[in-house]
Image (cartoon, rainbow, N blue to C red; front, side, top):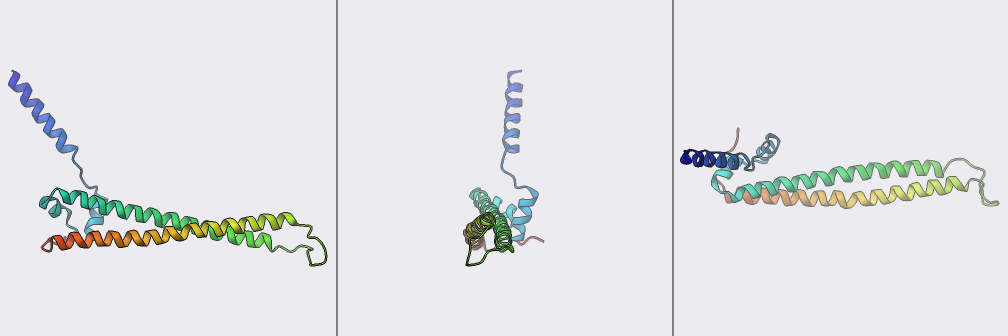
Length: 155
């Protein structure tokens, strides 16, 4: 009786540990295949390759996040610049001889233009970081491919 309990516990334990092991989602598998990495072959070669593949996927995720954030800031920045410019340059009875009566539109338009300039300025480092991360990801992929030159290609 005691041996049945131990056997059942051992089977349950090993079954749970196997099911909790890291496995790549179909989307991650597809990305790895697009980059020419045969993940099943690499995992069979060494357990350390799993961490390398996860690092590559993580670097790509960070790259995409920076790209999306950069595009968002750039779009909002251009929107604010355009809106601020339109508000700032509206027709008013201002000339050099007397004080402008519509200082509110000048303040709001100038503020929007300043905010737009700031957001475009924030987007540039995000775009540059995205390019840097893409180069790093490609270098990691190349190093893995050089480490296993006989890696079978996926169909």
